[in-house]
Structure formats: structure tokens, C-alpha cells
View (tube, rainbow, N blue to C red):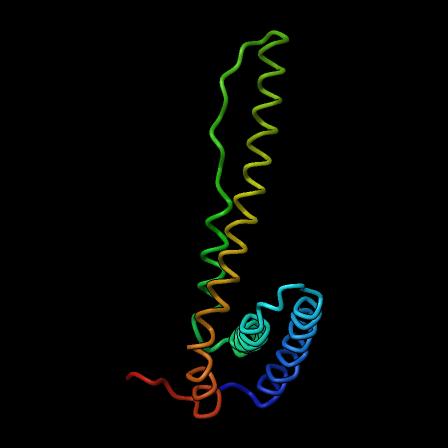
Length: 141
């Protein structure tokens, strides 16, 4: 069973995060000319609240899923064979720099995918996480 202080932290911090996301969405919605995106301005704070609560409660798979998807972005780039002259060294440095930039972009892409997928799935997992937090028993025996 999740302790009472952990549940309180989940409510408070998730509420703060959801309020910040809601304020950001409202400012973006008011600032837009087309007036579209009201559904996003309503759905994003709900997803943010559920995601933060699921991470803080820690009695579900959301945290492990996010870490696993985020780890996909950290890959080892292949070794390079180069000649020991000026052109070969310049080629080595430029390709290593390109691999470094590609690695950072891949890590950012996987991190974004992990957070978006985790926030979407956490909306469906959050009721079960609350049930487990208060009852302290597994749903399926």
C-alpha cells in the first residue's frame, strides 16, 4: 500500500504541474488567431496530472515504460576507419561530429516519444493506480 504522504505528494505536485500546463495552454489558446485547440487545452492538463501522479505513486508500470522507451535513444555509434593524413583526420572529425548530433537528436526524439506515450497511457492507468494506492492489493491475483 502506498503511504499517505506519498499520496498527498502525488496530489499536490500533480496539481501544480497540471495548473502550469493549463496556464501555458490557456495563454497559447488566447494568443492564437484561429481559436482552435480548445480540446488540447483541456486534455493536456489532464494528461499531465495523471502522468505525474502515476510517476509519484510508483505502483504501476508507467515509470518503467518511460525509462525503457527513453533508453532507446542512447545507442553506440559505429567505429570509424580512417587514414592517417589530413583528409582522413578531417573526415573522422566531421563524421564523429555528425554522429554526435544524430545521437542527441535520437535521444531527444525518444525522450519526447516516451513522455507523450507515457502521458497518454497514464490517463487509463491512473484509476487503477489510485485503487492500488488506497486498497493496497493487486487487481489480478
